[in-house]
Image (cartoon, rainbow, N blue to C red; front, side, top):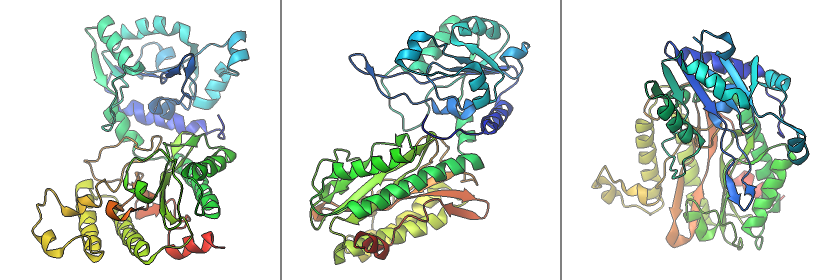
Length: 429
């Protein structure tokens, strides 16, 4: 890992919170992510299963975790299973956790090698009544691949048909959506690295550079500061491409007169940041670009003020939509009379602002959480309104990451330039 070590107390506290959510005589089993094949004998870069990491702090493949608070055998109330290394692995892959290192990282005292997992499973299954399995329940997930957690859940159902197999997802969504202060600081660190990547781009940008060159400047800054890289595939979209919401080709020239929409964020210690800024390739906004940009900025500022404990996504999005309608009328994109007669189920502003304003942020950039319960202190959300006008080859989105607190919220990206004067000043310094 590139990042500095995290206090094991975070993971000890996380497991305590988790154990309190389990029904009596229940067990949870969590597995490391698959090492996903790329082609030939190559694999994609390994990234730990977020729930396993949240509960253990162990960032290594082939890891398994049992949490069974009522187990009659104390050895399996918290048991971590690690890949056993050897000389071949050491030569070809490098260092792996020792048992003592895993204890220090996780706070778990009972450490075993993975080759003893099956024997342990037979023991604990003999006593427990419910088994919670960790399938991917993010409601944005679409996967046709039978990944490791699915394979394991199916194996459990086959081998132990009389046991009750339960969903771990709702518990983890509840717990992970409320960030511990240590987690907030890790996200804040990711935001700081992202800020420095953006400041670097402001100095680099000029007509004639290519989008991939901008992407290269960003990743240079990320890696230089111990980030593991991008928290998601970055979007560097100039001109018309800014109107393509998931544009990731990043292969066009940034031309004089273009706005360049950049959606990127660093990942630090497995925690994500998520920033969007839109800047002029030539360092100067045109009057029309300035009008659209300031409209989006006003929506963002008002939306940000509504991210507070007790608000609901339904009411939040409804109010943001009203603000956006007003701005689009002011820009001449919508007609006031047409808006008054619109179908409330299909508001006209969706033509120019077709995505949501906010999503949970944490270990995953689209983190788990329940959008149908009121917002709570400890939630971290993005705030990212945008206006996209394909006929003008003009797209603007502005995005910051917001922590909800007991008394309102804190903008974790408050020190990243966002006002037109700031951006133009830095680009032309």
